Image 1 (cartoon, helix red, strand yellow):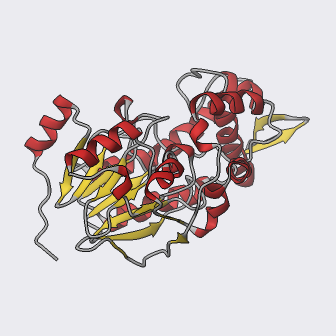
Image 2 (image 1 turned 30 degrees about the vertical axis):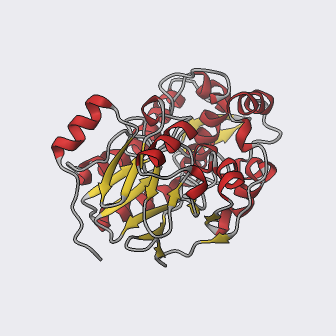
Length: 326
């Protein structure tokens, strides 16, 4: 394998100023940025321009993916493989559309294969069917994400720790659940540079707003990344890779779980003592931009309450929560 060089700080600063559609992180390894500074409902994509032209996730706009490919003397029909980090709509994204053009492989984690294959499988993993905001959510998805409502042709699954060779570059799957059951990060050739996916190091913090999410697993996954001591962390929702103070950034991200728990306990102490009441005074989101986000807020609140009850910190009486006094 050739000697690898990390991009310079100067390169990152230029990229931030110009907000180019893509940057080269390692030789032949490119970050394709999502629109809107990669904020949801956009997400970054990785392109490995190697013997097997490989896309990791497909959530960046087709415009940005196509533009990057053209800059590298390729087109969408040249893509040979798509590897998905997890089943979420902003990550499987345009994979089905790309497959129609490129007839390429599509690989995902076996735990959520059905969530990739079908829209109904995705709905079941979200756990959203029957929720009082389901119709609002469905209308939003239909309007904004019509491309994820069809079927995807999954051709294979990945194995935790087993490298996926692209030629001179390898992707090393690291199963780090919590965000979802299948959430997988990827070391690029080694574990110095990791595509952290939705351990995304954003100021918003961890997201675990559906059935296939688990707070305790998420905490353990962040702690595992801290133990791996990567030098570069590539987020799905930050414009640039994190190269400075990555350990501190990971610990701050991990600490947001505790900040939210404290906020929930404070609100319960002040009589905001049901899921409905707590969701109306957002404890996870700083604000609710549209009704569909109440679904995610309520899921995350329920997961926190479940842990607080298990730990004996909160009790529920007649549908109301109260702080358990020692």
